[in-house]
Length: 183
Image (spheres, rainbow, N blue to C red):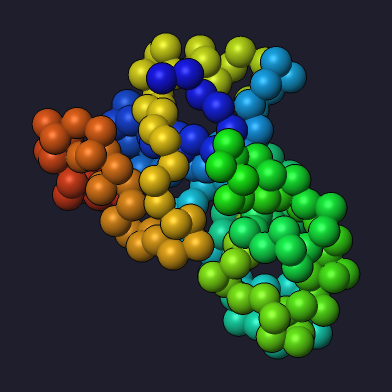
């Protein structure tokens, strides 16, 4: 399968020793001749949105999006009717990126937006032109269609579920520790 925006990238067992991407499932938000951008879906942070923005009473979880621009906040959502100027990035136009953050803050304060519609990431995962394709050829990533609700997943099980769905023989990895050095 060729990568395209909206697909999932699932780390293969070859990345188990990678301290950033081991057991990761990423949502590919952009893929073109200029490079690729994705967000890790299963790496929750200790921080909550109101830790960073105390004026927002929401206790929404922040997620580690990846190792690039980790001091910047990114967000994806499924509420283009509430957040104008956002950009659809999947073929079914179910997922959007960006939009006016001041408006998002107001929607959160007013209780019109919650974590069933938006997910916040610190940082993102990025690749230079052709880099992601090279990593796929080197068997670092599986590509799958996005068949999940990215706003309602179990971060502990998503990698294990996806790796087995890709190939039932991968069940051997179901109980692999997140940090193999502690095994």
